[in-house]
Image (cartoon, rainbow, N blue to C red; front, side):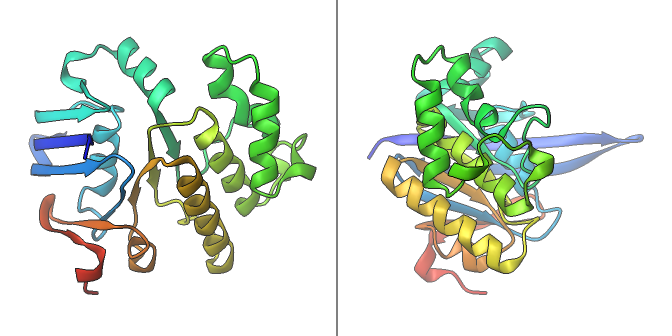
Length: 231
């Protein structure tokens, strides 16, 4: 099985006044192509920091990350950006839609960056799949939280990513809306055959994945198949 993400001996710290705060300590794991993988742990355990490093949004202090066969340590920021735009999708807790663009325009941004001649058609089809055919011309401020996250879902899959990173994708949604978004996420993921990496504090969501990496105090305390997960 091809390893789409290979993290080895990762370390990250930040300066806090005169001290350095250790966030991640000797983190190693691998994710197979097509796998669904959850990263769980209490607040402050380093989940979001790890996700950002794995996606090439930040640089580690130590260790290596291979993403889609590329060693991120060898790539400058321009080449990292090209890799993300061609191979990576993102879903964030706070949606991160561009407020001056409509739902459809938000979805097709990655496609336009790639120069896709079919951007409009692809964007419309994805919004149809997430149930927003009648909201394409609406701006984020005119959409509910659940609708905004569905637009973000459509955008995340628009460039047919090899791997999708989701950071607390239901964190700002009520339970019922969150469940709908997660069903859509896994349905779209299954259809596209995308590798899915989710950061979450929600163990019910984590249990929908094949594997779970558990962090505590910036260290891995478990890396197990989901059926072995205990609350």
